[in-house]
Amino acid sequence: MKNLVSQKLKLVLAAVIIIPVVVTATLLVYINLNPSQNPPTCSGEPAFIISSPTFFNHTCTDISKIPAQYMQKIQDTVKFHYAHRSHGEQLTIGLDLIESANNTFSVALEDFTLPTESGALCIMNGQRGYHGHINDSYVGPELYWADNGLNCTQDVLNNNAAINFSMWTWCTELDGWDESQVQGYLDNISLLESQYPNVTFIYMTGNAQATGAEGYNRYLRNQYIRDYCKNNSKWLFDFEDIDSWYNGHQCTYLYNGVYVPVEHAHFYVPNHDGPGHTTYESCQLKGAVVWWMFAYILGWRP
Image (cartoon, rainbow, N blue to C red; front, side, top):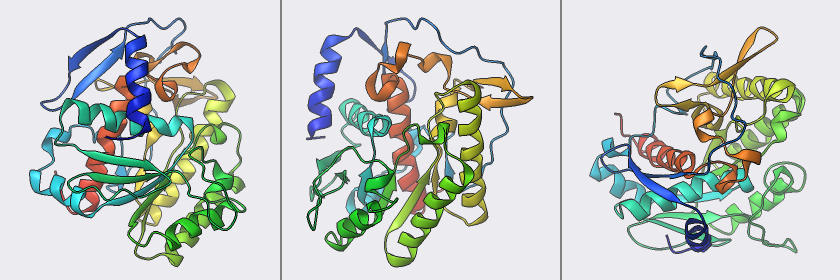
């Protein structure tokens, strides 16, 4: 991946102690050896999470299963517009790590520009400024779907006809948002779908790092998104679910009689001061889900 992500990653990797751990035939994972100080306490009880065949979650990480013809199909056809803030970097860091371990999973990512590299998953990172707007790789709701952000996304799609997939990532908004605010997200992504029928929009849940009342609120909002996506057959990248699972075990806590999914203790970093606020291993799992997601949308069935 010839981009700013890989340049930053090299500096980070030089500054911490890492070890390689093989988790699949094609996947190399890097684990930060700095121990966590206060990881979440996992209840041992699973949370109820709405699921659907159109959702991509912790069960979608073994990219060694993806057939070569679908890898080629992804790299030949997918032109991906990806907008996010710091938590969203987990996906791009993960994609970079996967490519470093196995260059079959080649990615070309550029800020504000759609790459044209042959034989690579091409990603336009962030929002390119048109009509007086500035280029921005740190994209909150107001720059993608809320308020004037809808215009920013429309400008990107109007000026980059090759884009055929688009996705925006939550940061911590869902920790405090109410149902009506989440409905605004769903309504506006649905509006974009109607305006750009040749673009596949991928919905997303928010990360699972908050605990207590904020974590419970985030869980409810994520369930609301899942319910909408299941009932309307939408594609969903389930960030919260991926956060909460490790090695066949889901981390949850009990709040108001409800088991709430929370980022697994295995991925915990003090003060969330890690790459994209987590560990390299968690980043790489999310990068793997990106590959699985595109293969599935393009027709592969494991």
